[in-house]
Image (cartoon, rainbow, N blue to C red; front, side):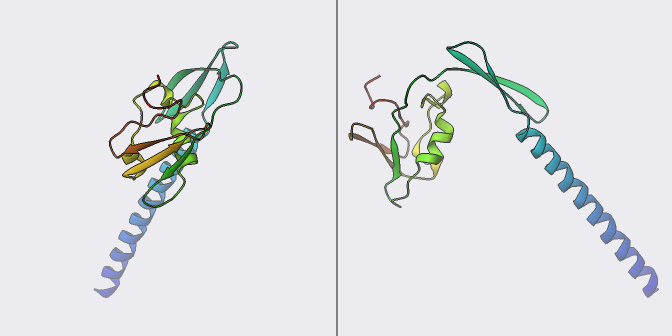
Length: 141
């Protein structure tokens, strides 16, 4: 009887392990495919298109070509004194307008209070639910 139970337990563990490895491999292949399928197409001197795949579906977004230097703001989380510039700019895009979508708030970056310091050394405070504005100063556009 012991041998039979040991065989069943061993077989169950082997089946579970095989399913786990298969599931992990499938997720890894999907992640790799999603990350390797981005394409940038230059449409004209004023516009380009980014094509990307997500879960086997192709999406496209058209963006204006950024000319000249960008006024890069410095972004800091006030409570922790941590600089969030790189994190926020990944979402803001090359035009610093969050790809024309609804702007993000400090809550999206796990913060209650963010300060944005512009190139001319002026700054703006953004509370938890305020929409971040990286280009110009709030109210100037």
